[in-house]
Length: 220
Picture 1 (cartoon, one colour):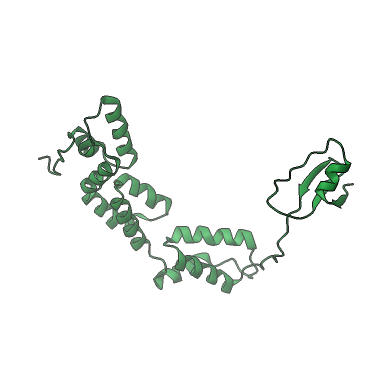
Picture 2 (picture 1 turned 180 degrees about the vertical axis):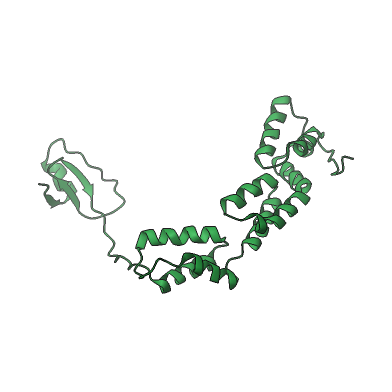
């Protein structure tokens, strides 16, 4: 049986030979001496937090409104969040949690808009210099359907050249390099552009440009 003895750590060090403990604790207070293993551990104050009750319909709606009001989200992400809350707190309703109906109602009220989410995410990625394939991956991860993603994908394709130039400028590669790069450096820069989601043909054109010679989108 483990017993806990409350002692001043300095007194313990003076009375017990070959004792080991650290005085570099970030917390002040008593120490616990575990007689079964001979170690000394600083006592951590336990938070007196009460367990939250299981969710009901009102609590589930409140959680959904909080999340949708604080974060730009999609239907799929909101559903994932609510499912996690239900796993953490449980459900006390007589019927199954009305996740689909609640999310649909929030969408009708404008709290969740997958099409607007896709457009905003596409614009943000384009401003940072990422290409269409990176947008496809982001929309897939957010659970955006094909219909809601269509406009964002079209905008990304239309602005692919400008986004690629922005990426090259940020990385100081291709026409924005300070000096002519050798073959290993060009290959590394090309790989970075491909990872950023740019089409290979477009990335090759930009990487073929000499420093200071920014190519035109039409190949001129």
